[in-house]
Image 1 (cartoon, protein in one colour):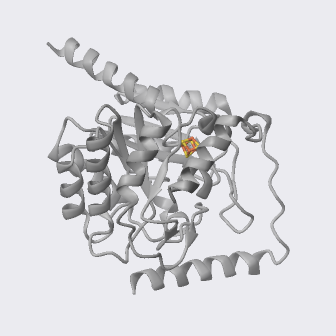
Image 2: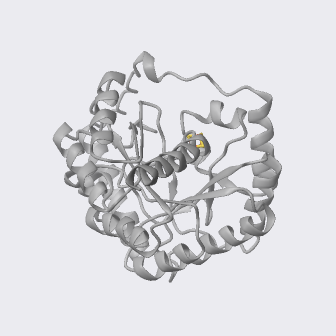
Length: 322
Ligand code: SF4
């Protein structure tokens, strides 16, 4: 029921966009600083073949991530569990919307096999929103964490979850108890833009989710991200940083929003690399353990290296407090 309401909402949104501009919106020209090379490497082809053979979806492909050539060449892929179909319809996201298939019981073992075959020291696992499931898909996250711990115990685990609308406490409790190394949940944008950009979600519910993870297990690193270029104001972004810090979020990621198709929300601004550096400086001053802010930063971009940096930063902070 909830899913159908959301799907209709997206229909209205797309219809409104087409009415406003019946001729397809012209593709927006990207500035030089966000051009990327086409993926052609052997590593890229091998990563794709492995994912296909294990029947795993990746957010790298489904979200049309611009970093796919670089990441897959290094065999870094972000697995998207619970299928490839989302019950939400966010205006920024390229993942397909509809009624998803049944949960695949083999998926946790397949994720563990992928981690082993790719030789991952750090894996990022995300999912589509599954508002159709009583637990929002939390149990599948737990099964994936357990399968990874069994099969590749030295791989550190980062999960990037949905907001588990209407069931966040139980879902978060179950996942926190499974002890991922990093719990990521993206705020995505400033609260003013939620009704158009992330209409199925609530800003403060997402913030409370992050706060709840930290309250339940302070040893788990928490991470959250925002996209810029959607029409947000600089001071609104600073407020989001403050809100994240008040929820004790450790790691902030910020990247340029890119319009996946002309039917998605338009890019209102291409934020310059200098402006990203200024945001990063402000965020560091606000006390994040780690900040990654650049046009091509994505939640899972360089996640393994950043996890190591975050651990070092925490150790340094604890040492300084002694
Ligand atoms: S940045 Fe993340 S989503 Fe994009 S290609 Fe790399 S691992 Fe995949």
